[in-house]
Image 1 (cartoon, rainbow over the protein chains, first blue to last red):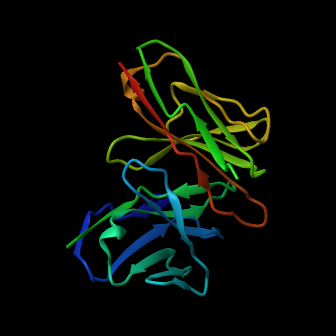
Image 2: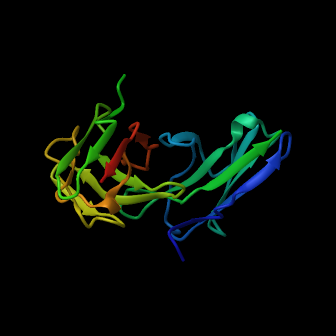
Length: 109
Length: 114
């Protein structure tokens, strides 16, 4: 099992749609989880941290399932500006951060 | 509030030339990372460092060298540039104590080897 695994997509959705991304991780001892967003030809930027109890930031909801070792990101009411690549990030056993390869989202009018 | 600063932003190298990509952070982060990203692909970890004087290989270290003499700086050295090293290079830093904080990225260096 890869350390952090994501569906590469692309996910092509119409404006206003709800889209969900999932990510699985292999290290059951991981304590830190994040979702990043990367726009084309730009550096990745933090979208939100993922907490054990789940957390929401506007149209974005992140959830953690430790038993199944997966993280999810839900985007409601998709906007054109949500088009980007979404990266799942997990704390590694060496104290480092491990990035997934990303899932590309394209929101169409 | 500079964060992570990378220089240069763009560079064209000839095959066989050498160069150093500079990276500095002012957040007192202990972890620093170098990634490369090829067009349409994900990030690949080249090297990372857990603190001054300590570095570790990542997924794709061949053809690169790093050093970490201070907490702030983590330069990446290409000794004999090859066309396969044409890519966008990102430096990042984070803090690991009781847990991990988020990673902050530099704006990237776009390198072309011809």
